Image (cartoon, rainbow, N blue to C red):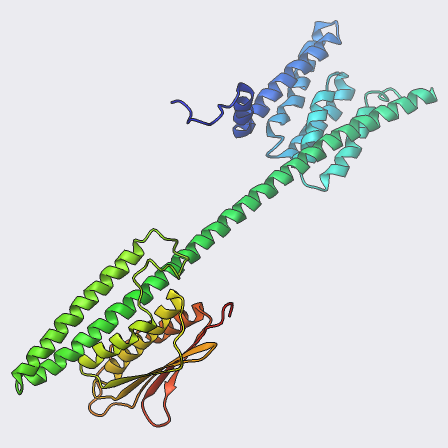
Length: 405
C-alpha cells in the first residue's frame, strides 16, 4: 500500500534503526555472537599449539554470552562476565576479553542502578591493569605511568559513554511522561467539556419539558373540574392544553436544533440560536396565567440589552420558578413576578403567597434550583431561594449588567 500524499517514506537506515529498537534482545544476541567470534579469532591467533584452541574458544564464548542479557539484567550479566575473565586469565592466559568487558561496563552504567556507575569505573580501571601486571609490576616508572593512564582512559571512556546513554534514556522517558500527561490532560479537558455540555442539555430539557408538562397537568386538572359544571370552560381548557403542547413541541424542536447547531459549543451568546430572553417574560406570564395560575408581572426601571445567555438565564429562572409554584403550591397560589432594572444589575423576583387549598403532591427529586444557580453562576450572578416571612416561597435572581463582572 502506498504512503499517503505529503508523507516522507522512511529510509532504509531509519527502518533498520526502528527494527533494532523494537527487538533489543535480538540485537544483543547478534552482538554477542559477533563479539564471541572476534574473541575466538583473537584468542586462537595468540597461540600456535592447537591444544589450547579449545580452552580459548570456550572462554571467548563464555565471556560474550552475558551480552544477551546486558539490558534486562545488566548488573548480574556484568558480574558473570567479570568472573569469567578473572578466573580464565590466570589459568589460560587468553587474550581478547577487553571487548566484552568494555560492552558490559558500558551496559551497567547505562542500564544498571545509579550507584553502579562509579563502581564500574573503578572495576574497569583495575581490570584493564590485570593483563599488564599479571607477571608483576614493571620496573620502568614511565611504563607504569603509561599503564595507569591507559587504564584511566579505558575506564573513563566507558563510564562517559554509559552516562551519556543513561542521560539520553532519561530524557526520552521524561518526554514520554510529559506526552502522557499532556494526553491525559487533553482527555480530562474533553471529559469536562462533555460533562458541561451534558449539564447544559439537562438544564435545557428540564426547563422546557418540565414547565410545559406542569402547565398541561394543571390545565388538565382544571378541565376535569370544569367539564362537569361548565362544558364551554372545559373546551377552553382543552384548547389551552393544545396550545401549550404545540409550544412545548416547538421548544423541543428548537432545543434539538440548537444541539445540532454547527456553532462552537462554548459560545453561549450565539445569536443564531432560538433562545428566549427577558422580552419573552410577559408572554410566559400570560401563558401561565391562561393555565389557571393567578400571576402578575411588574417591571421597574429601564430595560437594557442583555447577551442572549444572560437573557436566557433570566427567562429560565422565571419559567422554573412558576413551574415550581404549580408543582408545590398549586394553581390557587397568588404569584408575583418582578423585573427590577438598575444601571448595573437586573433583579428578577418570583414570589408566591402560599397554597390556598390542598397542596399538590410534587414528584420526588428534581434539579430545578440547582439548574438556576448554575445558570446564574455562568454569567456572574446569584440565586437566593427560601421561605418568605409573610408565607409562601421566594426566588431572587441577581444578574450584573456591567461588562467584565
